[in-house]
Amino acid sequence: MSKNSFFNEQTEQSLVKATIVSKYFDVWANVIISTQKRYPGRSSGKITHIDLFAGPGRYADGTQSRPVKILKNAIEKPDIRDRLVTLFNDKDEENSRSLEKTINDIPGVETLKYKPRVENEEVGEKIVKMFEEMNLIPTLFFVDPWGYKGMSLRLVNSVLKDWGCDCIFFFNYNRINMGLSNPIVKEHMDVLFGEERVDALRPKLKELSPPERELIIIEELCQSIKSYGSRYTLPFTFKDALGRRTSHHLIFVSKNFRGYEIMKDIMARESSSQIQGVPSFEYNPADFLPKQSLLFQLSRPLHVLKGMLPKEFAGQTLAMREIYEQHNVDTPYIKKNYKSVLWELEEEGKITASSHRKGTFADSVKATFPEL
Image (tube, rainbow, N blue to C red; front, side):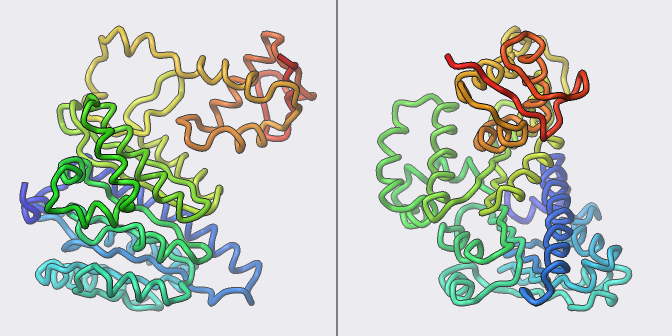
């Protein structure tokens, strides 16, 4: 599929992606603005959204794209409307002109305190150096390149270095999977994974099955991002129309656990399937078809968590919230999974708990795990 044909019609996957980004933007903006109100002298009072590969603003079928949704949402909310600074960019001149026109046609766009900027620049060293040298106000940074050109660890880090800045980026798995074995694009892979890491990765991939290959590629990418500092990363997988192959991943990066927790909840809700209440963190169109697979029926991920907690916290007494925060990072489990499992463990006499209402396990309830 050519880049131009991509914007002919919005796919289900694109809609889910736009929904995840828009929902996170809304919650992130409210959290940042609330903090700014409590500490007015510590920031400019502005928030920023930057999208370096913004596209034309709408699909050929008339469907509005992600930048338009974010601006329309901002117009409706005075706190965001008066603080939001936006920068949209697309190196395709036709796309940038179309986006600018689409933005100007949004009802009420003139009520935004800061007029949206639309640029037409190639994403590369110049933009990275500009961000590296700036002290950014709180920024939600979205990067959705067509393939891999322009995407780099330095680009992500150039924004994440400052307070209140989070990043969501599109990882085109098919193109990058092929690029890892293509010497012509070695430079692009080096800046995406880090040269030493990607050189060590290539030999490992040769003997792996496709699912194993995908897991290790995503793991290495997330570890590369974390190597720039203490970061939380969260990938969300998109499958093709038949549900057989991964098309791409949406990867969230933050320095703050609260941001990670918010995005994890959003991605959990947008997952196309859950097993025992544990979200898949995947959008798979095939999940909407009847499931007959024996493997699917026998999957019991909540039982895995139930077996992990007594071992992980043996001999300790902790509040539910502490258990959740210490354990959930880099797992598929969300807060309600921990509440459910802790309640079951208490009912079975495998842990004891402080006083609480039957059938619940609030954040403050303390669980005591016996020594092994």
